[in-house]
Length: 255
Ligand SMILES: NC(=O)c1ccc[n+]([C@@H]2O[C@H](COP(=O)([O-])OP(=O)(O)OC[C@H]3O[C@@H](n4cnc5c(N)ncnc54)[C@H](O)[C@@H]3O)[C@@H](O)[C@H]2O)c1
Image 1 (cartoon, rainbow, N blue to C red):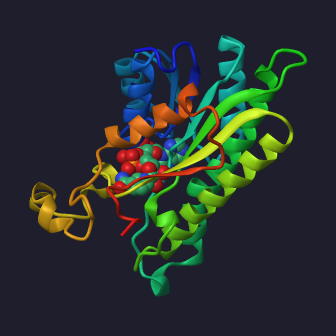
Image 2 (image 1 turned 45 degrees about the vertical axis):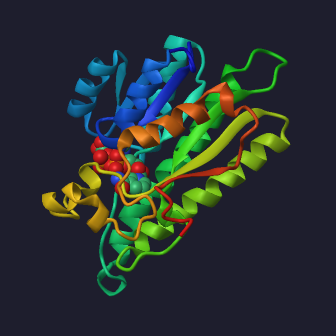
């Protein structure tokens, strides 16, 4: 299990769900993992399970990013992989979505990814040996709702659409400078995590062929399904992929 052996990885939102599964999968493939989350208590227990390091990080706070990256570079000397996974969901009709709700969601889902890319790219540049181009992989977790709309989720869809094009822009900018910093987005479909658990009653999750009848594969995704794509994009197996959007959505956006 050495697909990302010796890579230094930072995963945000790693206390649970897709972030925790990604951190686990990266560690299982040989990476040194820094598991970051706003929930310092839960991320400490996730990090100890992973055999990694816990980082208290609110992705909306630039000072937190600066401190986390400085400490990681001080200890490891470089950053190879950043997974910008932390995110929140909002199910609210347009008419009752207040501007402050939209801004609070954007702060995590868009500002958080923007700050991650800015500080992640800077760290990868600082990590490059003298005279050599910077290298690394940034994986941004968007959503199938960054590609299509959903009634009652205007704010969320807007933030995830922003992550989709932000990703491509950073990829193009790094590539055009002759750097090997690859930046890609993953677009999960409905994934069973704390974020979605309460959207359906327990029996609905247990009857996926009926609940997800309009999903081509008639099921939900697991956090491990998404984590598998994270490991692929973090590894050298995807060495010529940048600016790409990878759906892990059981066919939802193909239908
Ligand atoms: N679950 C789904 O169906 C689904 C589908 C598509 C995309 N996604 C995206 O996947 C990502 C992970 O979602 P999940 O389903 O695992 O949700 P989750 O709620 O299980 O995990 C999200 C994690 O992010 C952390 N977090 C929230 N705000 C933060 C902040 N400001 N700073 C740092 N950490 C913060 C939370 O504490 C939590 O541990 C999100 O970006 C989400 O939008 C999820």
